[in-house]
Image (cartoon, rainbow, N blue to C red; front, side, top):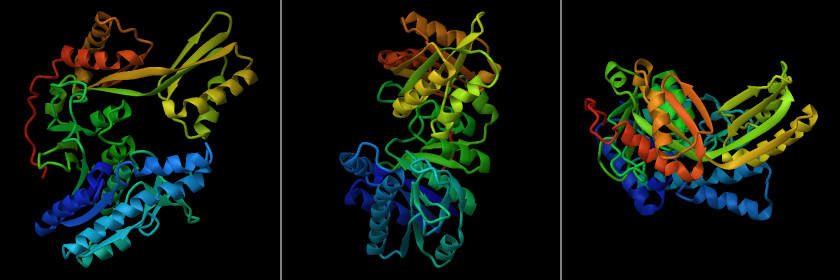
Length: 413
């Protein structure tokens, strides 16, 4: 059985933790499995490197920044390989360019284009445990790139897909996917399994368990995915294709994101091509736009409001202020003190009244809804940031998610 495992920053935070990871890997090896292991940088290392760069200049060149922050994974992958050697197990650490993992040239937010697997397969055939530095790749011209926050998850799933792995395990500091953030909701329950689509919606709505692109890849290539803790032996959450049992649960989880900002441009001409002119320069900077609302007026003008990640707020606001002048818009306003709260569940496709229940619950607690977006299995509301935790707790209680979920146990280890 070929297994790809990914260990996050807290899992390799120090030599003691790296030793524990090595022992876990060895246990799998003793069972006869072939292993490709992806590691993140040691906890806090990426932020430390970014802060060093920003002490020199506020906006360092992104090419050089990628070159700098990619070194975090180089350290952790080498240390894990050395630790495995110390136990007498042959291992080899490979950086992104050594695999190689080819990416686009969008520094700090690169997308994987292709993975060459020959070198990895050669090492596996010789009995090696292969350690791959996550989060990084290389352009076709040889420049180092990084994949953005959570990029090691993407590396792991992409490798699992390219190698045709039987399983991809994501090890982190939580035991799986919960009905809500256990730090906010004390009676949040761990889900035994969840569909790719539900997990994708949860990841896009703020759940920090998995990076969204990694779930997309797992869904496209049907990679069986497990989220579990590297600190315990507890079984985690299995992420697979949707089945009939999943559809019986109306709402599987409540998610939230504080990494949100809202931008409004008022009084733009209400004619074809204006929306494209507004959003094209934002897209060119690699900024993701989430929710969009357009309101038309009888005078031939329109107001457009949209949300972007708070980390991109200042840059997006500057872009829109320039566009507003070109369009002779009335004004631009921004707000980076908002949050997005979402309910997610495959059962929402076949149950009515879910949105009404969500809106009534928020209203009951005096929480005003600024924006709403929906999909077949998700409803998201933008609210004032100060009400985030109250909203999550209230919705979790309203949909009875603290009760045991009657989902069949899956053997995933």
